[in-house]
Image (cartoon, rainbow, N blue to C red; front, top):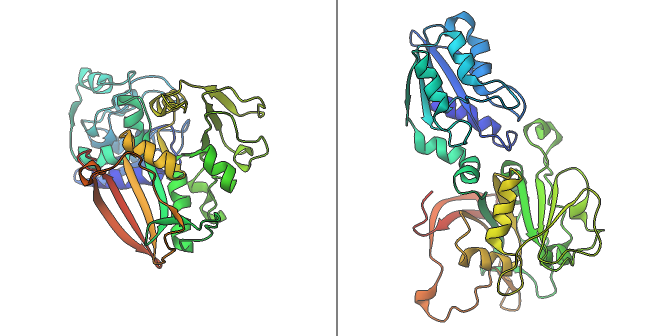
Length: 357
């Protein structure tokens, strides 16, 4: 199963909106076939593994990271392919909660006399498919909040200058995060201040391993101009507002959502909408106000902070805006989960305390 998970991980930046799945076929204690799902609409992991195994699949054991599908989508059911191949046993790391599968894959296999079991390395499989599982089970994408700061917690000088606080390796890592998430979300404040592209810019040699992410802007009052770089073609684009903007942009999906008490787009409503558009994961790159709002609303699943060994002083702009905190006991508690050096910078990964993985 560990090998199947390693294969599945090769689809981190390409399978959206499908889950990342790997498959290994073993007969007589020897691997006879393996495969992984590469892109939506293309064959699933089991199909690649069965092709590699050929006749050796008959009577073999199958290790797959997700329950085999039982429905006709863009491709035929993998459960049917496994039955036709005559495999003996199927071990899945985790069941598929998608309503057209949800145990039906296992049921088909058992009805054909194939032994099934699940739960082997389940935690690892869930982590790999966290976005897909979040969309299906919680009806919202997995949310990663990305921030970059100086060592004294500053994101830009008082005049807005911020390029570059972090080094080249940290910035390249952000592009990989964008590719893996498959969607990038920002606020009108950030777009108006910085006019970012929110695209993936990695070496051309790596292009087959990623696609341009969806670009999403929270713009409660439709302030972002139609000339903003974020609206350029090359990916799906979503303009989420509380008031319909007066200047539509061609091929940009504009959606007016419910507003919160402050007249801003409701964050839960925005995430629920994105789930209906098959968005599995969202990388949030924004300013201090939206970052603070997401944290206070308990909507951040993972926090990634790049800390540069620089001091910018107390006149520079802060990292997160958290109004209303007057006592130490009111703090937003985090748990560090990882830390690594990227060139001169420190990459810190955390989650909200008590939230789990």
